[in-house]
Length: 449
Image (cartoon, helix red, strand yellow):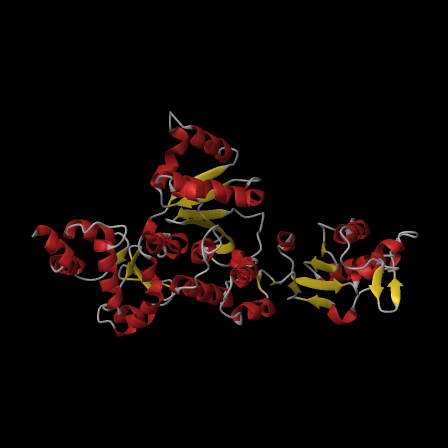
């Protein structure tokens, strides 16, 4: 709906006064609205709130009254009417036309809630294409949930603005775990971290630009261990974010299939933007460039390729180290689901970087999102080649314990233990620490004896 506003610079908003009550009940049907009071039964003469067909009846009226303007310079949603234009002169003419149409249908606005001829307006919870501060304040002050109902209420409110949060599904995964059938409500460290991170992300939500259908669309997509994500762009400016938690069957897909699934779901989400003209797909998965040249395809791939080929596109390979937006943000959470959930305390390492001899120089001389000698800082975390950097402290020991003897591990030797850690985490002299830890493992020593 808001995509229609692209290029507009002046806006007015008309809010109808008690919109439902401006519709007269059909003569003879008033008895159907009867309600009981201590003085007896009373009937509504106008349409009340709460009737089954009231929303659709009111929306049908608004569309009928403003049909000639919708899609040209008017967006309407129930009793909220937004008039948009690229010039003040046209805007005044269109305002007059809308007022004439409302007056002819005897519909009246609430002047206290109307806004006229402004370059910034709040509409449907958005200000431009950024989060309305009034709505964000409700999220910022939301208390820690103590029941599953409270958690679902928060998730629903935050989910309304998921388009502003890269990798929303990955971040919210610990909260989603509580909604599974048969899972008891237990609010632990993973849930608290996810809860606070979502509030922080929405508090500092980025500004998205409206799409310009005269320019080429580009998007990046990627798959982490528990979710897929993507970002739609034009001229390096973000238009929309997409993220989705992977279902249990999809979690069993191969890495290649997950990457392809991320591509397909991104196309399905943004197909209304992408079908009209050629667009560019940036991917750090080289094999996606050759999907259409494969001789034999299984049933799943055939279905996906058929859908992909309905678009006009160009795939460009993007090195993983450059794919920071989609890649680094999503993959820093993947290991948390492959190892024990106790290590979800990784948020604490943000403060430890400033005191660590290996990483404090990077924190002092780097700005958010910029690379510095093979390092990237994003959201307060330091990455080296998509590997999360771990400062000296208890987190290193916890990672060593989980990688060597955790529930998913089998007290492997030093090489295999390092192979578990090194693709996802980094710290100087990791091999030395792994060898030292394995050599002092009591369980391993007892097994050898």
